[in-house]
Length: 197
Image (cartoon, rainbow, N blue to C red; front, side, top):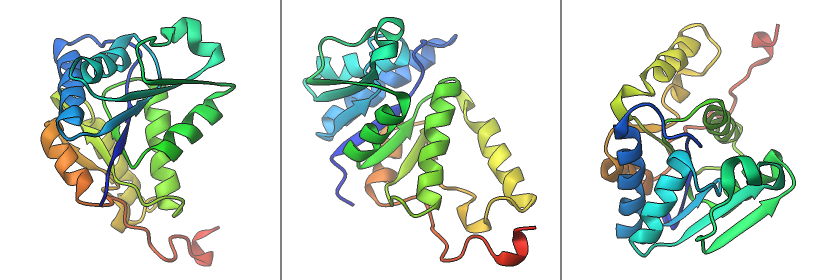
């Protein structure tokens, strides 16, 4: 798969452990080594700022998308090649998705989870066929993986979609897997009439 741009979902806070910032910087540097453009939420703070700073310091290209309403709270990054200011979170996510060939989630909070699950859902519905990955720093995403497995066991998620994302603690290995192709298996008929009631 021809991946040229990677959307990174991550926290606007740095997190409580130093390995989170280290992983964000490592991912930024690895994107540049592969000549991949960063697409992200446009902030200069937290893990968002760290990944962007790492890309820019290594001579790479970074594109941010930030709602006007969050410009003060998340503090828009002034060193980006492009910073798109939009009217809503919906516009932010739509533009980030449109500009991206693949998606990576770093540790983050509710916003990161929401962005990740929306892009997974769009893949499940066949609205895109772009690979998705979790950079599992310090096992951060293991509870989420367990929750998805429970969703399969209890009949809410098709078995074929138990792993809609690649998972690795290594930025290099994760990007290798994303560049190999889609991670979501879209089933022809993922909801049957008998399952609606």
